[in-house]
View (cartoon, rainbow, N blue to C red):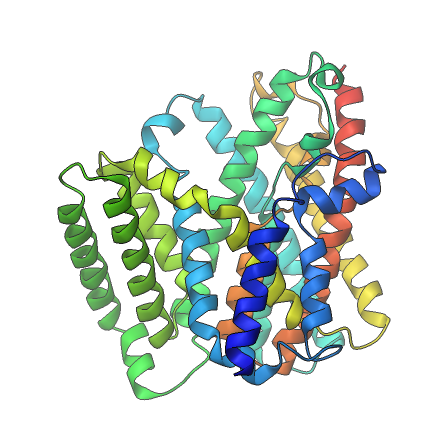
Length: 398
């Protein structure tokens, strides 16, 4: 009974609460950041978790694992639908190369910094050391332009070109993060039983590709004829449920598998506008549900994690600044932008939250809970400071 009560409670909170989040109220800039990002639901999940009300305890969250997989799959599918090649080709090629360079440099800086400092913080195996370093680096590479929502058109002024490049770079950052997460689940599976190992290693990778191609062909056959929105919604829900469930059974990432399916579908099917409308229609409740589940598993062991999170934030800040400075040296066209363009890439947004939750579900342990807790504090740092840093960037742009 507790499972049904907890599920209905979080669904009610998510679908009713999003009407209040993501809106500009007459409140201070610091508090407005939380309302525009929905981060208050992270603390709501913490309140419902084992450390306080214990409504979302470990047993309940374990029973709701299929719901968690569905949330991750929906986010992955939605994010994959943002990469339509025909639209990406409209931008200069140097933009794409700049996005790759900036995100890869951030990835390398953060991965190297965490990999060499992690043994001083946690006693873990070399296997988990690589996994944790890569996951935190992928989360650090992501960028969301939440800070831009704090500024009106009059305040942006003549900096429209900066806003344009920041939005483009943020999308490429997410693509690099998802591609870098793929080897984590392929070559470092948490489970070691025979079925999973055979599926993920050796010739069975080829079998996995064949299965993915077969599913892609099957879903394209469903979408080859124009359908009503209700029929299309049913197909999409079934698609995400099946892929997420299959990925969970094989201890693979529902986020990554649905992301690649979304990328393929948006470039192959003619119904992409209707599908995207269906996916985005419940984007906010899905995101808030993710925050609640993530907050329920958020463990704050001691005050040292706050300092460690500050170190992780500083490492990511250094990576973004190095990446931003590097792209300003790429070509004469990129020299038009300030060398400190990395100041506009500090906000992290929702994708790193999905990456962290995906890692927590796939590599469940006390260590992963601690790592995710530290990363969540760092994300709060980033989202709170992002508007101020974007403001400084826009002033320099003028």
